[in-house]
Image 1 (cartoon, rainbow, N blue to C red):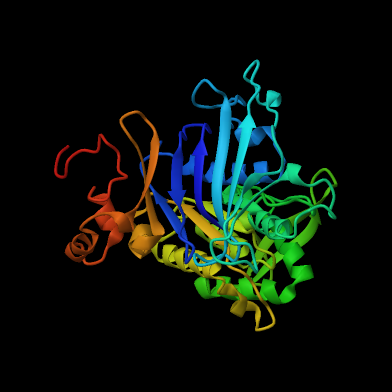
Image 2: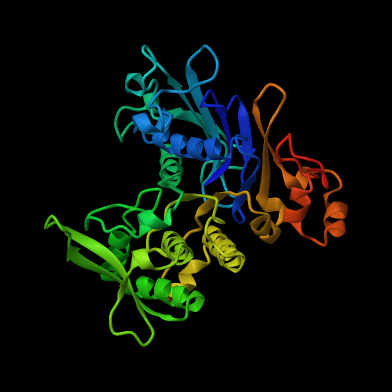
Length: 395
Protein backbone atom coordinates (compact mmCIF):
# COMPACT_ATOMS: atom_id res chain seq x y z
CA UNK A 1 0.00 0.00 0.00
CA UNK A 2 1.02 3.59 -0.59
CA UNK A 3 1.55 5.62 2.56
CA UNK A 4 2.31 8.87 0.78
CA UNK A 5 2.82 10.05 -2.78
CA UNK A 6 4.43 13.15 -4.27
CA UNK A 7 3.96 13.82 -7.98
CA UNK A 8 5.64 16.55 -9.98
CA UNK A 9 5.03 17.42 -13.61
CA UNK A 10 2.07 15.13 -14.27
CA UNK A 11 -0.83 17.12 -15.74
CA UNK A 12 -1.73 19.76 -13.12
CA UNK A 13 0.28 18.24 -10.28
CA UNK A 14 3.35 20.31 -9.38
CA UNK A 15 5.02 18.95 -6.27
CA UNK A 16 1.63 17.76 -5.03
CA UNK A 17 1.83 15.49 -1.96
CA UNK A 18 -0.84 13.36 -0.33
CA UNK A 19 -0.78 11.06 2.68
CA UNK A 20 -3.16 8.09 2.60
CA UNK A 21 -5.27 6.50 5.30
CA UNK A 22 -4.19 2.85 5.75
CA UNK A 23 -6.89 1.88 8.25
CA UNK A 24 -9.77 2.37 5.81
CA UNK A 25 -10.61 4.26 2.63
CA UNK A 26 -9.03 7.58 1.66
CA UNK A 27 -11.77 9.95 0.49
CA UNK A 28 -10.90 12.90 -1.76
CA UNK A 29 -13.10 16.01 -1.66
CA UNK A 30 -12.91 19.15 -3.73
CA UNK A 31 -14.63 21.15 -6.46
CA UNK A 32 -14.40 20.28 -10.13
CA UNK A 33 -10.88 20.90 -11.38
CA UNK A 34 -9.28 20.56 -7.95
CA UNK A 35 -7.15 17.56 -8.94
CA UNK A 36 -9.08 14.60 -7.49
CA UNK A 37 -9.20 12.66 -10.75
CA UNK A 38 -5.63 13.63 -11.61
CA UNK A 39 -4.41 12.22 -8.28
CA UNK A 40 -6.22 8.97 -9.01
CA UNK A 41 -4.70 8.83 -12.49
CA UNK A 42 -1.28 9.55 -10.98
CA UNK A 43 -1.66 6.49 -8.73
CA UNK A 44 -2.31 4.44 -11.84
CA UNK A 45 0.65 6.16 -13.50
CA UNK A 46 2.86 5.26 -10.55
CA UNK A 47 1.99 1.60 -11.04
CA UNK A 48 2.61 1.84 -14.78
CA UNK A 49 6.02 3.38 -14.30
CA UNK A 50 6.97 0.95 -11.55
CA UNK A 51 5.97 -1.92 -13.83
CA UNK A 52 7.95 -0.43 -16.73
CA UNK A 53 4.78 -0.52 -18.80
CA UNK A 54 4.65 2.98 -20.26
CA UNK A 55 1.44 3.06 -22.26
CA UNK A 56 0.49 6.15 -24.16
CA UNK A 57 -2.87 6.39 -22.39
CA UNK A 58 -1.17 6.73 -19.03
CA UNK A 59 0.30 10.14 -19.80
CA UNK A 60 -2.14 11.41 -22.37
CA UNK A 61 -5.32 13.38 -22.37
CA UNK A 62 -8.15 10.95 -23.09
CA UNK A 63 -9.73 13.52 -25.39
CA UNK A 64 -6.83 14.78 -27.47
CA UNK A 65 -4.16 12.12 -27.11
CA UNK A 66 -1.59 14.80 -26.34
CA UNK A 67 0.83 14.63 -23.46
CA UNK A 68 0.13 17.19 -20.76
CA UNK A 69 2.81 18.39 -18.38
CA UNK A 70 3.76 21.38 -16.30
CA UNK A 71 6.98 23.34 -16.58
CA UNK A 72 9.62 23.49 -19.27
CA UNK A 73 11.82 20.61 -18.14
CA UNK A 74 9.40 18.01 -19.51
CA UNK A 75 10.10 15.67 -16.64
CA UNK A 76 7.61 13.70 -14.59
CA UNK A 77 8.62 12.29 -11.22
CA UNK A 78 6.91 10.08 -8.67
CA UNK A 79 8.08 9.63 -5.10
CA UNK A 80 6.22 7.21 -2.86
CA UNK A 81 6.57 5.71 0.57
CA UNK A 82 5.10 2.23 0.70
CA UNK A 83 4.01 -0.03 3.53
CA UNK A 84 5.27 -3.60 3.25
CA UNK A 85 2.35 -5.08 5.20
CA UNK A 86 -0.48 -2.69 4.40
CA UNK A 87 -0.44 -1.07 7.85
CA UNK A 88 0.73 2.30 9.04
CA UNK A 89 3.07 0.62 11.53
CA UNK A 90 4.67 -1.73 9.00
CA UNK A 91 8.13 -1.61 7.48
CA UNK A 92 8.54 1.23 5.02
CA UNK A 93 10.17 1.48 1.64
CA UNK A 94 10.70 4.75 -0.19
CA UNK A 95 10.76 4.62 -3.98
CA UNK A 96 11.32 7.29 -6.61
CA UNK A 97 10.89 7.25 -10.37
CA UNK A 98 11.78 9.85 -12.97
CA UNK A 99 10.63 9.88 -16.58
CA UNK A 100 12.04 12.15 -19.24
CA UNK A 101 9.38 13.09 -21.80
CA UNK A 102 10.88 13.42 -25.28
CA UNK A 103 7.88 15.24 -26.62
CA UNK A 104 8.91 16.31 -30.09
CA UNK A 105 5.55 16.87 -31.76
CA UNK A 106 3.88 16.65 -28.35
CA UNK A 107 2.17 13.36 -29.08
CA UNK A 108 2.04 10.49 -26.63
CA UNK A 109 3.84 8.07 -28.94
CA UNK A 110 7.06 10.01 -28.34
CA UNK A 111 7.20 9.15 -24.64
CA UNK A 112 10.30 7.24 -23.57
CA UNK A 113 11.20 5.89 -20.18
CA UNK A 114 14.52 6.77 -18.63
CA UNK A 115 16.32 5.01 -15.76
CA UNK A 116 16.04 1.63 -14.10
CA UNK A 117 13.14 -0.21 -12.52
CA UNK A 118 13.19 2.03 -9.48
CA UNK A 119 15.52 3.88 -7.18
CA UNK A 120 15.01 4.51 -3.51
CA UNK A 121 15.75 3.56 0.03
CA UNK A 122 14.68 0.74 2.32
CA UNK A 123 13.93 2.35 5.63
CA UNK A 124 13.55 -0.83 7.68
CA UNK A 125 14.63 -4.03 5.90
CA UNK A 126 12.92 -7.19 7.13
CA UNK A 127 15.03 -8.77 9.86
CA UNK A 128 17.06 -5.60 10.36
CA UNK A 129 17.05 -3.10 13.15
CA UNK A 130 14.60 -0.22 13.21
CA UNK A 131 16.02 2.71 11.32
CA UNK A 132 18.45 0.60 9.27
CA UNK A 133 18.48 1.74 5.68
CA UNK A 134 20.11 0.99 2.37
CA UNK A 135 19.80 2.44 -1.14
CA UNK A 136 18.74 0.21 -3.98
CA UNK A 137 18.23 0.34 -7.71
CA UNK A 138 18.00 -1.84 -10.77
CA UNK A 139 21.56 -0.98 -11.80
CA UNK A 140 23.05 -2.51 -8.64
CA UNK A 141 22.70 -6.10 -9.76
CA UNK A 142 22.84 -7.99 -13.01
CA UNK A 143 21.73 -11.51 -11.99
CA UNK A 144 19.78 -13.14 -9.14
CA UNK A 145 23.05 -14.33 -7.61
CA UNK A 146 24.35 -10.75 -7.43
CA UNK A 147 21.13 -9.31 -6.09
CA UNK A 148 21.37 -8.19 -2.46
CA UNK A 149 19.17 -10.19 -0.09
CA UNK A 150 17.36 -7.07 1.08
CA UNK A 151 16.22 -6.34 -2.47
CA UNK A 152 13.74 -9.23 -2.20
CA UNK A 153 11.82 -7.11 0.29
CA UNK A 154 11.85 -4.20 -2.12
CA UNK A 155 10.57 -6.33 -4.98
CA UNK A 156 7.85 -7.82 -2.79
CA UNK A 157 6.59 -4.37 -1.91
CA UNK A 158 6.90 -3.22 -5.50
CA UNK A 159 4.65 -6.11 -6.56
CA UNK A 160 2.21 -5.20 -3.80
CA UNK A 161 1.59 -1.76 -5.34
CA UNK A 162 -0.64 -3.16 -8.05
CA UNK A 163 -2.59 -3.97 -9.97
CA UNK A 164 -4.40 -0.67 -9.72
CA UNK A 165 -8.02 -0.37 -10.85
CA UNK A 166 -9.84 2.86 -11.62
CA UNK A 167 -13.61 2.42 -11.45
CA UNK A 168 -15.88 4.91 -13.18
CA UNK A 169 -18.80 2.54 -13.69
CA UNK A 170 -21.58 3.40 -16.16
CA UNK A 171 -24.80 1.34 -16.04
CA UNK A 172 -25.24 1.17 -19.82
CA UNK A 173 -21.71 -0.23 -20.23
CA UNK A 174 -22.16 -2.76 -17.42
CA UNK A 175 -25.29 -4.08 -19.16
CA UNK A 176 -23.64 -4.66 -22.55
CA UNK A 177 -22.89 -8.16 -23.79
CA UNK A 178 -19.19 -8.87 -24.16
CA UNK A 179 -16.69 -11.45 -25.30
CA UNK A 180 -16.07 -14.37 -22.91
CA UNK A 181 -12.44 -13.23 -22.67
CA UNK A 182 -13.22 -9.56 -21.99
CA UNK A 183 -11.67 -7.88 -18.98
CA UNK A 184 -13.53 -5.24 -17.01
CA UNK A 185 -12.89 -1.70 -18.25
CA UNK A 186 -13.00 1.33 -15.92
CA UNK A 187 -16.55 2.04 -17.14
CA UNK A 188 -17.71 -1.50 -16.26
CA UNK A 189 -17.80 -3.01 -19.75
CA UNK A 190 -16.86 -6.69 -19.46
CA UNK A 191 -18.62 -7.33 -16.13
CA UNK A 192 -20.82 -10.17 -17.54
CA UNK A 193 -17.67 -12.10 -18.53
CA UNK A 194 -16.04 -11.43 -15.15
CA UNK A 195 -19.13 -12.69 -13.32
CA UNK A 196 -19.24 -15.83 -15.44
CA UNK A 197 -15.57 -16.45 -14.68
CA UNK A 198 -16.23 -16.00 -10.97
CA UNK A 199 -19.18 -18.39 -11.15
CA UNK A 200 -17.14 -21.13 -12.84
CA UNK A 201 -13.85 -20.65 -10.96
CA UNK A 202 -15.02 -19.78 -7.45
CA UNK A 203 -18.69 -20.55 -7.01
CA UNK A 204 -18.58 -19.92 -3.26
CA UNK A 205 -17.46 -16.34 -3.82
CA UNK A 206 -20.04 -15.84 -6.57
CA UNK A 207 -22.76 -17.02 -4.18
CA UNK A 208 -21.46 -14.57 -1.56
CA UNK A 209 -21.79 -11.73 -4.08
CA UNK A 210 -25.26 -12.91 -5.10
CA UNK A 211 -26.47 -13.21 -1.52
CA UNK A 212 -25.36 -9.72 -0.62
CA UNK A 213 -26.98 -8.40 -3.80
CA UNK A 214 -30.26 -10.12 -2.87
CA UNK A 215 -30.23 -8.47 0.56
CA UNK A 216 -30.25 -5.13 -1.23
CA UNK A 217 -32.79 -6.18 -3.87
CA UNK A 218 -34.84 -9.02 -2.32
CA UNK A 219 -37.12 -9.41 -5.33
CA UNK A 220 -34.18 -10.83 -7.35
CA UNK A 221 -33.70 -14.59 -7.07
CA UNK A 222 -30.67 -15.13 -9.32
CA UNK A 223 -27.89 -13.34 -11.14
CA UNK A 224 -27.33 -15.17 -14.42
CA UNK A 225 -24.23 -14.45 -16.53
CA UNK A 226 -24.79 -16.77 -19.49
CA UNK A 227 -23.03 -17.50 -22.81
CA UNK A 228 -24.95 -16.60 -25.94
CA UNK A 229 -24.54 -15.63 -29.59
CA UNK A 230 -24.91 -12.11 -30.95
CA UNK A 231 -26.43 -11.05 -34.28
CA UNK A 232 -23.10 -11.57 -36.06
CA UNK A 233 -22.77 -15.12 -34.76
CA UNK A 234 -20.06 -14.29 -32.20
CA UNK A 235 -20.04 -15.96 -28.81
CA UNK A 236 -20.81 -13.43 -26.07
CA UNK A 237 -21.73 -13.37 -22.41
CA UNK A 238 -25.08 -11.81 -21.48
CA UNK A 239 -26.01 -10.60 -18.01
CA UNK A 240 -29.55 -11.49 -16.97
CA UNK A 241 -31.55 -11.60 -13.75
CA UNK A 242 -34.43 -13.78 -12.58
CA UNK A 243 -37.00 -12.19 -10.31
CA UNK A 244 -38.88 -14.05 -7.62
CA UNK A 245 -41.86 -15.90 -9.08
CA UNK A 246 -40.74 -15.38 -12.68
CA UNK A 247 -39.92 -18.26 -15.03
CA UNK A 248 -37.91 -16.24 -17.50
CA UNK A 249 -34.85 -14.07 -16.86
CA UNK A 250 -34.72 -10.49 -18.05
CA UNK A 251 -31.79 -8.65 -19.61
CA UNK A 252 -29.53 -6.32 -17.64
CA UNK A 253 -30.48 -3.42 -19.89
CA UNK A 254 -33.97 -3.54 -18.37
CA UNK A 255 -32.94 -3.24 -14.70
CA UNK A 256 -32.33 -0.03 -12.80
CA UNK A 257 -29.03 1.82 -13.01
CA UNK A 258 -28.61 1.55 -9.25
CA UNK A 259 -28.89 -2.25 -9.35
CA UNK A 260 -26.18 -2.52 -12.00
CA UNK A 261 -23.86 -0.15 -10.16
CA UNK A 262 -24.40 -2.03 -6.90
CA UNK A 263 -23.55 -5.32 -8.62
CA UNK A 264 -20.36 -3.85 -10.10
CA UNK A 265 -19.36 -2.54 -6.68
CA UNK A 266 -19.98 -5.95 -5.08
CA UNK A 267 -17.89 -7.68 -7.74
CA UNK A 268 -14.97 -5.26 -7.58
CA UNK A 269 -14.70 -5.49 -3.78
CA UNK A 270 -15.63 -9.14 -3.18
CA UNK A 271 -14.10 -11.04 -6.10
CA UNK A 272 -11.63 -13.82 -5.39
CA UNK A 273 -8.47 -11.91 -6.34
CA UNK A 274 -9.13 -8.21 -5.72
CA UNK A 275 -6.90 -5.43 -6.95
CA UNK A 276 -4.20 -4.10 -4.64
CA UNK A 277 -5.42 -0.54 -5.11
CA UNK A 278 -8.99 0.42 -6.02
CA UNK A 279 -9.70 4.01 -7.06
CA UNK A 280 -13.45 4.57 -7.14
CA UNK A 281 -14.82 7.77 -8.66
CA UNK A 282 -18.13 9.26 -7.55
CA UNK A 283 -19.90 6.24 -6.02
CA UNK A 284 -22.94 8.47 -5.50
CA UNK A 285 -23.85 8.45 -9.20
CA UNK A 286 -27.26 6.77 -9.76
CA UNK A 287 -27.32 5.36 -6.21
CA UNK A 288 -30.13 6.08 -3.76
CA UNK A 289 -28.78 7.53 -0.48
CA UNK A 290 -29.53 4.28 1.37
CA UNK A 291 -27.33 2.43 -1.13
CA UNK A 292 -24.53 4.91 -0.46
CA UNK A 293 -24.36 3.45 3.03
CA UNK A 294 -23.84 0.01 1.52
CA UNK A 295 -21.20 1.40 -0.85
CA UNK A 296 -19.31 3.02 2.02
CA UNK A 297 -19.52 -0.16 4.09
CA UNK A 298 -18.29 -2.33 1.23
CA UNK A 299 -15.36 -0.06 0.42
CA UNK A 300 -14.43 0.13 4.09
CA UNK A 301 -14.63 -3.64 4.53
CA UNK A 302 -12.48 -4.11 1.43
CA UNK A 303 -9.90 -1.66 2.80
CA UNK A 304 -9.79 -3.47 6.15
CA UNK A 305 -9.66 -6.96 4.62
CA UNK A 306 -12.97 -7.94 6.22
CA UNK A 307 -14.75 -9.41 3.20
CA UNK A 308 -13.16 -12.87 3.52
CA UNK A 309 -15.85 -13.91 5.99
CA UNK A 310 -18.49 -13.53 3.26
CA UNK A 311 -17.11 -16.57 1.45
CA UNK A 312 -16.32 -18.76 4.45
CA UNK A 313 -13.46 -19.24 6.92
CA UNK A 314 -11.17 -20.92 4.36
CA UNK A 315 -10.75 -17.63 2.47
CA UNK A 316 -7.92 -15.27 3.41
CA UNK A 317 -7.50 -11.82 1.98
CA UNK A 318 -5.33 -8.78 2.54
CA UNK A 319 -6.88 -5.36 2.63
CA UNK A 320 -7.33 -3.41 -0.60
CA UNK A 321 -6.12 0.18 -0.63
CA UNK A 322 -9.25 2.16 -1.45
CA UNK A 323 -9.22 5.74 -2.74
CA UNK A 324 -12.59 7.42 -3.36
CA UNK A 325 -13.30 10.73 -5.11
CA UNK A 326 -16.73 12.15 -4.31
CA UNK A 327 -18.92 15.26 -4.37
CA UNK A 328 -21.67 13.72 -2.24
CA UNK A 329 -22.58 15.33 1.08
CA UNK A 330 -24.45 12.14 2.02
CA UNK A 331 -21.38 9.99 1.37
CA UNK A 332 -19.08 12.30 3.33
CA UNK A 333 -21.55 12.24 6.24
CA UNK A 334 -20.72 8.53 6.53
CA UNK A 335 -16.96 9.09 6.62
CA UNK A 336 -14.61 9.42 9.55
CA UNK A 337 -12.49 12.60 9.67
CA UNK A 338 -9.24 10.61 9.42
CA UNK A 339 -10.40 9.20 6.07
CA UNK A 340 -10.96 12.53 4.33
CA UNK A 341 -8.52 14.63 2.28
CA UNK A 342 -9.43 18.04 0.82
CA UNK A 343 -8.09 18.98 -2.62
CA UNK A 344 -7.79 22.64 -3.64
CA UNK A 345 -5.77 24.86 -5.95
CA UNK A 346 -3.74 27.71 -4.48
CA UNK A 347 -3.41 31.19 -5.98
CA UNK A 348 -0.91 29.87 -8.55
CA UNK A 349 -3.19 27.00 -9.56
CA UNK A 350 -1.10 24.31 -7.85
CA UNK A 351 -3.03 21.38 -6.37
CA UNK A 352 -2.68 21.11 -2.59
CA UNK A 353 -4.05 18.26 -0.49
CA UNK A 354 -4.76 18.52 3.24
CA UNK A 355 -6.05 16.06 5.83
CA UNK A 356 -9.27 17.07 7.56
CA UNK A 357 -8.00 15.83 10.95
CA UNK A 358 -5.22 18.44 10.79
CA UNK A 359 -7.67 21.34 10.70
CA UNK A 360 -7.83 23.45 13.84
CA UNK A 361 -11.12 23.45 15.73
CA UNK A 362 -12.46 20.35 13.95
CA UNK A 363 -13.91 18.72 17.07
CA UNK A 364 -15.91 21.81 18.04
CA UNK A 365 -17.10 22.35 14.47
CA UNK A 366 -18.32 18.74 14.25
CA UNK A 367 -20.24 19.18 17.51
CA UNK A 368 -22.01 22.20 16.02
CA UNK A 369 -23.01 20.04 13.04
CA UNK A 370 -23.96 17.04 15.21
CA UNK A 371 -21.15 14.95 13.70
CA UNK A 372 -22.33 15.45 10.11
CA UNK A 373 -18.96 15.78 8.37
CA UNK A 374 -20.55 16.19 4.94
CA UNK A 375 -22.72 19.08 6.08
CA UNK A 376 -19.69 20.70 7.71
CA UNK A 377 -17.75 20.36 4.46
CA UNK A 378 -20.63 21.78 2.41
CA UNK A 379 -20.74 24.81 4.74
CA UNK A 380 -17.27 25.74 3.48
CA UNK A 381 -15.59 25.36 6.87
CA UNK A 382 -13.23 22.62 5.63
CA UNK A 383 -12.39 24.11 2.24
CA UNK A 384 -12.72 22.07 -0.92
CA UNK A 385 -15.70 23.98 -2.34
CA UNK A 386 -15.85 26.20 -5.46
CA UNK A 387 -14.28 29.61 -4.86
CA UNK A 388 -17.22 31.31 -6.61
CA UNK A 389 -19.82 29.53 -4.48
CA UNK A 390 -22.69 31.94 -3.71
CA UNK A 391 -23.15 32.89 -0.08
CA UNK A 392 -25.91 31.13 1.82
CA UNK A 393 -29.30 32.70 1.07
CA UNK A 394 -28.12 34.59 -2.01
CA UNK A 395 -29.37 34.03 -5.53
